[in-house]
Length: 60
Image 1 (cartoon, rainbow, N blue to C red):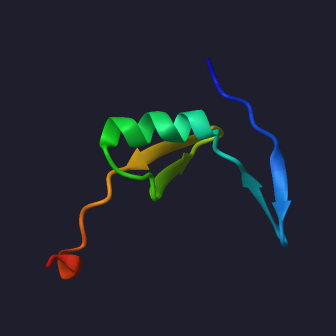
Image 2 (cartoon, rainbow, N blue to C red; image 1 turned 120 degrees about the vertical axis):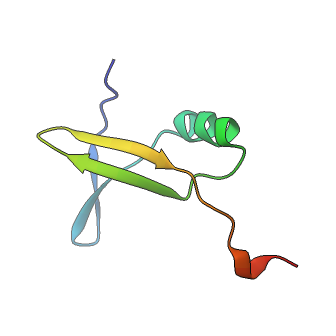
């Protein structure tokens, strides 16, 4: 079932707010915060969570 969201105005652009339950589900599933999403547009906008890889420069 598709999730319908309204567009909101952010400055001169429009945005879609991601529901907190959706974010929490994916963060729990991945074990890390969702920081990046990919978007595919073909008459339908499809969002997918991208797994972020640890930054090598931040290792102790």
